[in-house]
Amino acid sequence: MHKRTFGAAIGLTLVATLAVACTSKDEEKATPTASAPVATQTVTSGATTTASPAPAAELVWPEKWRKGTQPILGSIKNAPARVTPTPLPAGVTATPAPPAATPPAAQKVPIVFYVDTVTSGAGESPFNVDATIGCARTSMFSRGMRIVWRLTAYDNTGTELQPATIESLVLKVAGKDATFRYGRHGDAGWFWTATYDVPMETPLGTLDWTVEAKTKSGATATYKEIAAFTAPGAERVMVDGSKTSTDSRTMIVN
Image 1 (cartoon, helix red, strand yellow):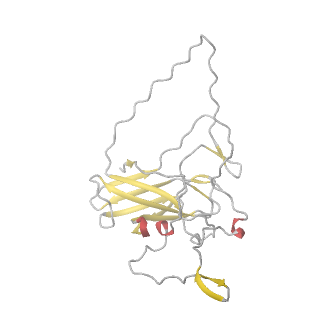
Image 2: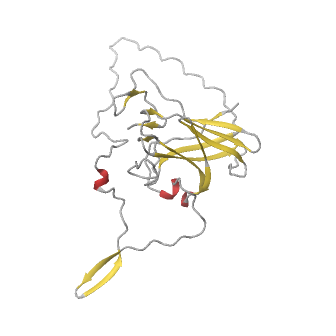
Image 3: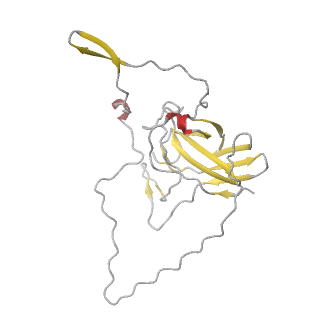
């Protein structure tokens, strides 16, 4: 039976763009490639005209692309502070809090995972839907986007699992299987990646997925995201008006 393992994190925080760190195309080759032409600008000083390197291009999303885009995670300015409990009247004793729950016994697992999801690079989705920032770590995606999973795994001796020791490493999502590939990703180093293209008809809400691993020595393990947090009255309203539980797992939000 597969054992459930922990230690992976799915972050909501957006990070700086590192296209080589999350590309889902063929892993970076060791051989150098030809340098791209250097852009130049004309500088005129008196009667002398010279060409000099242009300033480094800024990460600017073109206006024509910004039109019609929908933010996945926005901010609310001047949001009201959380309501504080009303003080009890004099002489009234508060109801004692229930005793703290006892945590389960610690598990010993054969494989420890780190897994996260990031947006893909521009132009990779077959549905022509790109994120406004590529290679950004997030758990919220739109229909039509390509989701990239990044993964590292270690056995119970602390040794990293690489192709020489992995029998199979599979992402299971929406009834499909995707095999993880191991490769170098620029300065981010070597890790495993798998991808999934979100169909345009995908229902909004949580996108369930698991990772199943088997080593050549016979160890097996399954990773699942931490379960949803639910509480009375806690819900998230999607752009189509549907409602779902407050959930930190991977979600399709628009």
